Image (cartoon, rainbow, N blue to C red; front, side, top):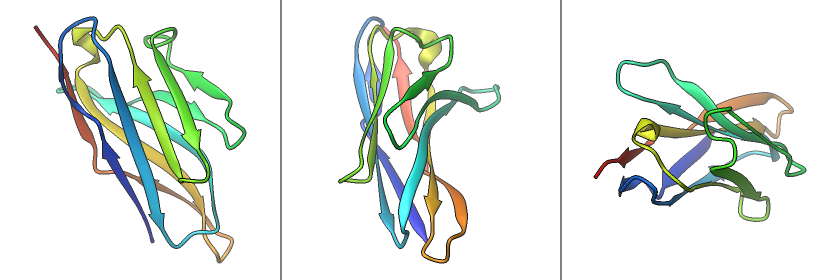
Length: 120
């Protein structure tokens, strides 16, 4: 099993910044792509950013230029630096990771989510 634990959420004023972290632990051979997703009240979960094992990031149009995804492979951790936050960024943010288990099976795991609220 693989556990993903997010941290770094909270309340921030519009224009402010937050940095989310997601650490993976458990029994796995390696981690593949890691993602951040978010779900606002009454809306479907949406992809925010994805990063490959090599460090290449892709972003939703709504966050390009404001959010930066990064990872530390030695720590099995993915980060999401969020700048110039807007009220519409308010959501529960989830991380996800593709884990290659020791059996060779590739399974996607999800964290429990962390609340981000952007409000004055």
